[in-house]
Length: 232
Image (cartoon, rainbow, N blue to C red; front, side, top):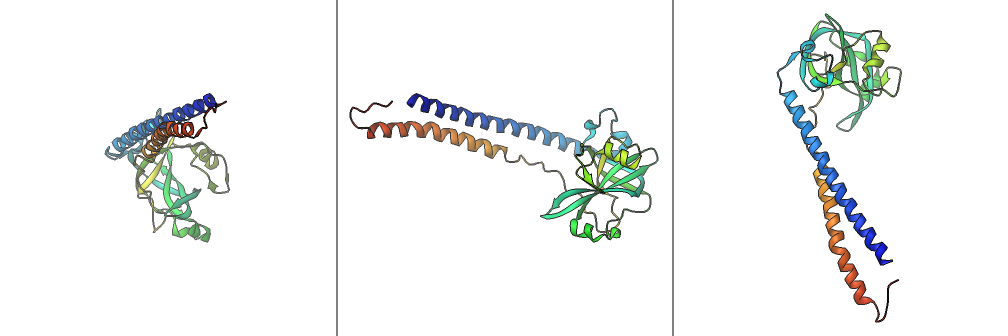
């Protein structure tokens, strides 16, 4: 019985140490990713078609680009289940027609109350040629949507929906995409370390408590055992 208990405690300690190490590795990965994002965001703004490598779109993610074109309000969708400052809403996504090609632009956040009001003039895109600046983002695969509401920006799905070939990236607009107060522009990406260091410290503390506490428990049990008692 005691052998099994010892093995369980040792196993628990090893698991807790392993979880702590895993959190430290996740911290390293996050810091490396944050460093890469900071480097890319520090690059000067460049024309979209010159910055983006169409053969390797991932290489330009988070770089800031500009594009000149005209918005097509007839080709617009809304990314559902977005929040900002605790308010539910949607992100307004509109097609921007370029001189050569077309790019999808996430124009920003719209509170759901305004969206459900149906007054599209409150978030209408500029109706003249504009120069839009924003960060390069890559597509995700959609799991479905309802009507004009989608779950993510799926460029393949939008290309099929709108019948227009699209660039393999989209822009998260920071300027040039708003004609009125809405949509609200994006906030900078979260470049903090996250909770990983705190979680790692917690797991290591739990492991130390187990290592230090278990022998003390065993000593107390041994002292409380009556003479002649033999553990099974």
